[in-house]
Length: 64
Image (tube, rainbow, N blue to C red; front, side):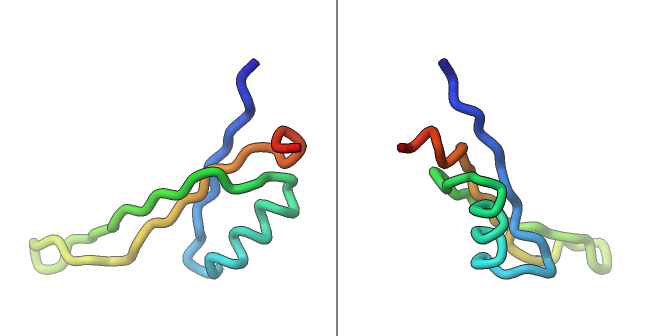
């Protein structure tokens, strides 16, 4: 039986701690993390915008 997995993205208006608290509130526990840079175009050239951070979670009851 597969475990339900969901990705949570750290929103621009929240801290990593806020995102982790949101996951816990939803009943999920972190089992993975990934980051990737986000770019936008400025004067025809790519420019760094921010880091996209995501946490993979599974239901906390699946851990116990």
